[in-house]
Image (tube, rainbow, N blue to C red; front, top):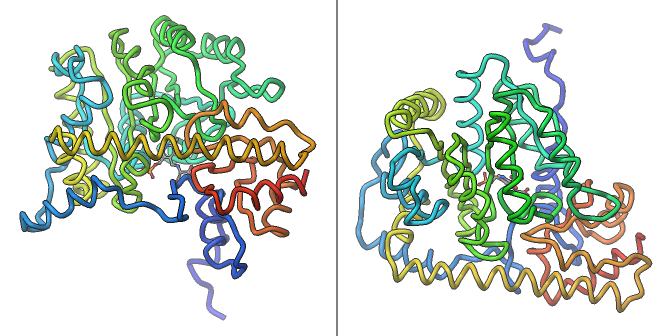
Length: 400
Ligand code: KET
């Protein structure tokens, strides 16, 4: 047999989240529940087409625009809309033009463009992520040439944040370390910092000259659009440079459109212009320019008061249904006499709950009940509904 250049290629493991999602789809069992991927589903178990998206798509279809290339950094009205959304319309950052924003392929694309750009300006690029974090943070920064470490975050004893340990760890980092932070709805734990704690993180980043990189993939799923952006606004007020990757996958239910943005906050407008030019170079050499459809939807909504109000209503409905499901799951587990107290599920934020189930229990949930969760014990409570919550609680109770 001739040798092949691919002889050296080993089978890569399935992705811990997307791999499960694929496995779920091919599971023939009728009674199955997908709590793996972070996707919001309606009471009917479907990924929603938001009312605001339906209406905007109708308008876009009527306008009959051709499918031409977008500028390298995306639609300008989209990028300015993003800045108003994350910093607040009256923000000094927006007015002074010291931030630049580029459209990206979802939140993932924003992280990747940011990491690639940073790796060109840092000598020995190092980054830290929370323990635990969304696994792709590590993969993205490593693939951009970073050495990636962790800082303490989740406290297994209390189910909250081990804030003193986190702060001490950040204080020990060397200058220019990139600190990846979940601005709200921490993935996978669902536990967030208070605004007072954020103020202390901002102080440490400023004092130690660290580079904060705030990932906000769930704005609006915690307590509201402005409330969830509190950390970003504190960093903006501190006057230090920082990065924000945001995503509309979840908040507009536009997962497949790959729509998000990277924003780099600089010291002044002149600096922001130079940074923007380099971000464009990174994008051009990767995928040339971004896709248009999702950006057209989001920019239309962000710049139209009537559609914006509709989006706020759609988002509120999703946020409230998730809270209802948290309550339903915790109550069902209690009613069934589960050995463990799961009331903490109701205190967590966003789409996820860190269930404290072990990898073995997670495996049994899948094998015996067709209930899919991430190995870490993370469950997506946004996929629960009145029809599957009881079955899920029963399954969890059985594997404890
Ligand atoms: N950041 C975080 C924290 C995050 O959870 C996701 C997606 C993203 C960024 C990426 O978003 P996107 O706009 O799709 O590129 N998380 C879910 C999906 C995934 O793993 O890709 C999840 O954790 O299930």
